[in-house]
Length: 341
Image 1 (cartoon, one colour):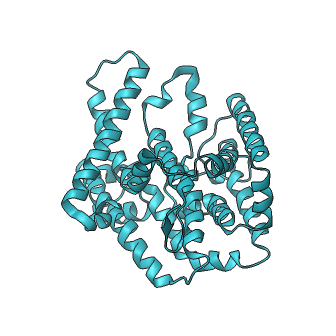
Image 2: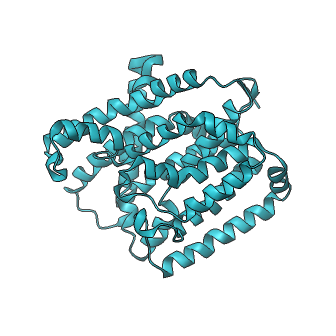
């Protein structure tokens, strides 16, 4: 393995990050929810794909910071340059579009109030953007999280947080970053716990095949439960402390993927490396190309759903990659300040 910052490069996590961004992109496709009776299965698999990103973020944060000197202000500075600045850049155009179409009037807000509110909650016009205000809260409390990892009771905190994550729901419209922060906290801490290692992780690794089998079984059992029950995705306070079947499924799914990639896919795979390296750029731009495709698709007459899905994938993914490549060629090293990669 190659070395990064004095430690082993995590090819397993590079590959997992590529899968995570693909799941996020697929979850925003309009076509995947039109597969008739199969739509509910697709929804169960793809909904809350953000959970993968949150877990990976927690893991990489501890892996890169937990065992070394952690400079809080330096850390926040980098996050501002490489996460917040691209968020401001893309949000500006999304908010401007919202004002042009007078979307602020739907919320009963003045243009200025609409702009401020949009920057705070994210995702008003480009749905994927809600993630940034939420993940910024994790950046702000990072010293507290690192402090917890050095205490014997960290495992108890992780279990409690994960339980809350699977017994809570995302806020309606993802328009409350604080509620989203608490909802996803369990998976961020779980990522840190997996990165920290220890007796529990050694035990799980020694029985990784069994863990994968149990995780896969749990995922499919919960899929059956989901198909036969009330399919709730959002509604924070309305369903608080009620089982979130999708998040429970994602818990099993994350564990399964972690050990699958660590055991069998911990090697450099060029296409996956490329997707992982531009994953943040894909996150920022794919929502815009999805909106463009929706507008263009209204003029198309496509009867076969598989054809519609293929067109949507080729359009959104290819134009996202092309636009990222153009931006990187024009901006060079400064592209991270604009598109995040």
